[in-house]
Length: 125
Image (cartoon, rainbow, N blue to C red; front, side, top):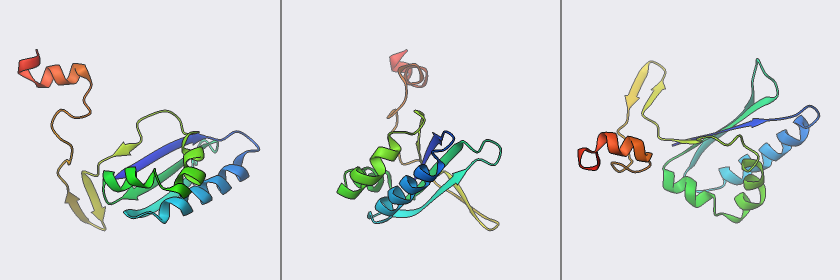
């Protein structure tokens, strides 16, 4: 599972953001199911930042969000993220030239908007 949080960091707030991201990654990295995490700045728009974490499962990520240190150090940072979709299932991965394909772990119909559900389910049309 990938979690991608994007941020807009105003001039003069970079050092504080970097420290907050360091504390957030430290707290998240101590949680069961955490695989890796990275924080980066856009090459083209330096005010744009990203925090990407990888987790064994969606459950591991959701459980991590309830950990005390995560609530103290990561949640305040994550609350400042640009409001957009942030959690993604991994469907393809590459290690060198080897490509692995993964099946979706989501139940049919779960998470779909009403319009999409009606289109894909003839009984709801």
